[in-house]
Length: 495
Ligand SMILES: Cc1cc2nc3c(=O)[nH]c(=O)nc-3n(C[C@H](O)[C@H](O)[C@H](O)COP(=O)(O)OP(=O)(O)OC[C@H]3O[C@@H](n4cnc5c(N)ncnc54)[C@H](O)[C@@H]3O)c2cc1C
Image (cartoon, rainbow, N blue to C red; front, side):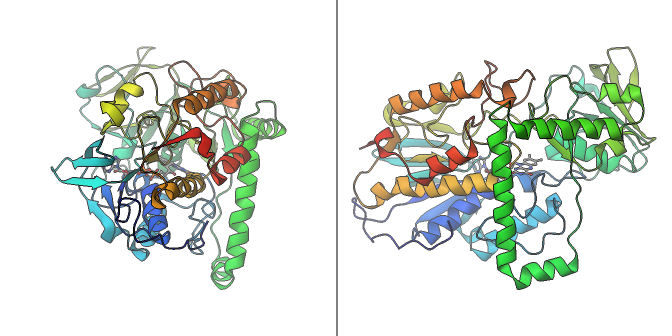
């Protein structure tokens, strides 16, 4: 990645340069715009329904938000950042990073903000796009960079509407609501809930974490980078590059480990999480409440330097009785107790199976993506779908998600997509889509491999699909890299 590609010939087979529409201006949409430009494609528009770039990092602004892979890995490989403040930098810094990269590369000028793509139809060999404002556009290629953790998952708890305090999802934080000295409830125990509880334990008068499932907590310190270290990164870009590469290698080892539940990496992670629990939580009753009944990394591993410390603070309480309902004054648990609250935060995650939906996508012959995906979303190598030519997804179905950098994933995917575009650019074909046979073969292999991963070892998690099959990339990260290095064109239909 990173090197400039030769500009494409002025004319493709149809006598004009290819036109692209990129949907979404989060991390993956910004990447797409930069890489298209770098590859010599000038005719493209990015569509973003919000008013700013940033996606996840624009929408999530809750107290305590940080990335949970090291910042020097959670960076574009071509825009390493010597200024990261911490090993795991805060969300607002990440949002500022994406904004500055987008600005530097002129992405904002390429983006139509505040306009949601409502419909894309493949007709007459091109994609016809229509936005919510009624704007229409035609494109040869559509890049769907619409996000994976984007649509908030709202829990089905009776009485949510009855609550008279402030109530919001963690991705819709209401900053007008005061927090200091208030009684705050947090529903959920995932990475977000853990970050919020750690940030508020000293500020709230009372902080109740409503736990359905205990989580393993991987201890990770989060030291700041010193001025000297940052100066060194600025002075010697090769140090920064080395750091990025070393972290990438480390996380590759980790990702290779999660797909083999019996691997040494998994045993090491389990031991570290167990020692963290045993050594950090003094009260034996609380310790048992916090002890998960499944293996570490079966659910997305929660990384935290200070959660156990926070949950033992005087204002904090871990409630495990289960929520019966929400009432005007607070949350009633199944043991009949009413937790009176001023603020209730739903840290209940996202709907990770939505992808480009609810955008209506209509492929060849009038086939609707919503119908093809009615049971569950599938895609060949997580990028494209049979019958939907020249439509490519970043961070699409069954791709690698988990405790590693989705930026690295998207960069590898985009380099692959550019190679799929090559036959379009050269005029060898006008349409490219994966064959049904290759997609079904891949899917069967994926489902079989998923059974051997750590995610299939007996927990309930957002990785699991409606059948209980982990929906993440079940092969090693090395295999992902190898697959993305060069498309096997025999798996595609060129028309
Ligand atoms: C709280 C939180 C913490 C995370 N921490 C990490 C981490 O530490 N490491 C990591 O690798 N990943 C992390 N992730 C995952 C994170 O989502 C990805 O790293 C990355 O930001 C995804 O970028 P994206 O561009 O694919 O999607 P998004 O950031 O979701 O962006 C999608 C964009 O598309 C726009 N959009 C969607 N549909 C349309 C449409 N029809 N028309 C127009 N615009 C549209 C949206 O408005 C949005 O701006 C985290 C996610 C969350 C929620």
